[in-house]
Structures are given as C-alpha cells and as structure tokens.
Length: 224
Ligand code: SF4
Image 1 (cartoon, rainbow, N blue to C red):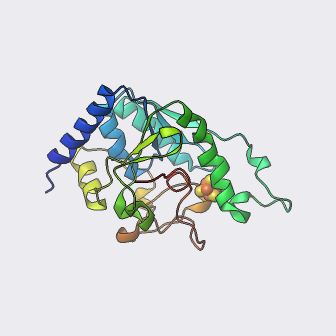
Image 2: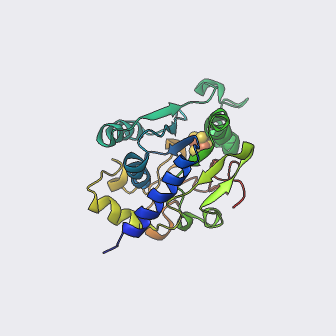
C-alpha cells in the first residue's frame, strides 16, 4: 500500500504556486500507460493546461485511439503536433526512411522541431519523466531551465514503476491497449519492440541502436 497523499499535495501546491506567478503552462504526453498518471493529475489540478502529443506519423494506431479515450475519460484536450515534412520527404537518397538511416535526425524533425514553436509561447513545460526510467533522466532536477527561460517541471521525477502501477490501479485508470501484449514503453512503431523487463521498461525502444532518447529530454533538456 502506498500513501500517495503527500506526493499529490506537493504537486498540487507546486502547480498552484506556478499559477499564482501567472506562468503560462503547457504539458506534453506520449499517450502510453506511463503517461496516464500525469494526465490524471493535470485533469485534477490544472485541467485547462494545453497538452500536446507529438504525432510523428509513425505512432501506433492504438496510441491515437488511446488519446481519444483519455480525452473523454479525463475531460481534457490532447492536441496533435506534427512536423513539416511528409513521410515521403523523410527518405534518404536510397529511398530508405530516416528512422533506419538517421534516427536522431528523424526524431529531431518529428519530435524536437515541432515543439520548438510551442516553447516560444509558454513559461513552464510539465512532462512526466521519472528518474528511474534511465540514467539520463536520473540526472534531471524537479525543475530546470531550458531555452528562452522556459522551465521544465517534472512532478513525477521521484515516482518509480511500482507507484505508477498502484496509482493506476487505485484510480481505476486505463492502460494503453498494447500494454498487455508486452509493450512497456511505446513510441513510434518502427522504433518500439515488445519488452517485459520491469527494471528496464524502456529497453524495447530503439533496440540495437546506441540511442535511448528522442531528444525532447536531452536536446531540450536544460540544466537542473
Ligand atoms: S522514434 Fe523512430 S520513427 Fe519516431 S521520430 Fe524517432 S527515429 Fe523517427
């Protein structure tokens, strides 16, 4: 049994404090099971917050349907953000998609670049990174400054996978439709594999590549 009350009070207090400072706030989500806790907290403590999902064009259809389910259930709006290049423009000279030939560039044009204009319009970016997810995320602070003075805010930084699991159970929240099929971390179809190691639940992403992040939390990571 986990007592979530102190965690929730802290997050509620922090969000109230940002609102009292008139911060313009937005949030991002990847609409997977791990995202449900953050979206539920936003629906409780800051329901008017604009939430964005980077729709790379390569998402699982189940992710897009889960987004619609979450919008209805939590009474929030999750806006789709899309990059400038069509899928056909994302091939190299040999006709191979960039996700095979240059995945870092593919992530840049489909995830990092579409978010940059959004950062111009806000002061505070809420996202659901957790320190336990990777060594990169373990270095992050609860808040940290990035470009143009925007502050990233990570309310779930100190939550582990067990807490996420029990919070979802206790609040009777849904899981991504592919969760039961063994997809513990879900991004784009070409770069996501089934993976059931609970201690390393991002191991199914970019398998076989020396890559663990898309850039949203590194290129746009800032300093703790
Ligand atoms: S996760 Fe894969 S398909 Fe998606 S933007 Fe990155 S490289 Fe491209």
